[in-house]
Length: 267
Image (cartoon, rainbow, N blue to C red):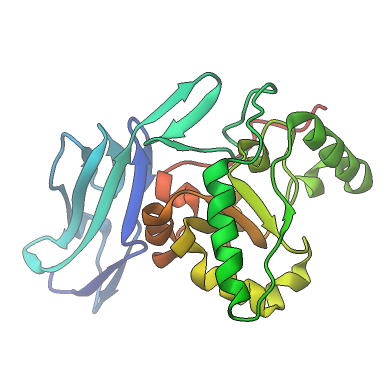
């Protein structure tokens, strides 16, 4: 189609679960009429992921491949998206995606899961705190591991004050709190004002060097299910953290999972 001058895609990175689907959206710069039928979609490895004529990608088996969209009759105008297909498994009531424990509104933990604050997470935080101190900044733990029973109290308190629909935007239902993993720390004060501090700016810029991500970034509320929390960090290891933070992704986007409760609160 000679009407199509250029193509752009809405993402450069896409993760999808085995058996799951996700869509790549395309924008076209055109001089006249052009439709989705003027595009050609292809996968570099259909054993890993397939793609249909509308850009819907289906994960087949764990691995990586390229999904390319080009203009019919003009391969010079094309865009490629790196697709990672991930393997989800459940073990003892916990959900792991490519070995990473995921806890959000879609994936919970058993009531009995009670590891305390993870030792590696604590050590990484202590190192980060020490390095921040050298720059005159004061990072400290405001909250870390919370067991199921404690989350019941916190959530119920917010539920009583605001109703469950509002509470769900900033507080996790019991069994769905990342704090119960022992891999999460709330830094300093759990207050929106923290986001304006030098500590928060340093944390966002450097936390990946220690294996942490800002778990609920600004502008990603519809993906994570939670309001922006500049203080809430999650340990995932240095390599993974750098990959996530450098690409401006959430853990959900990186793993190819959703964060949505199955229904209304019935506590």
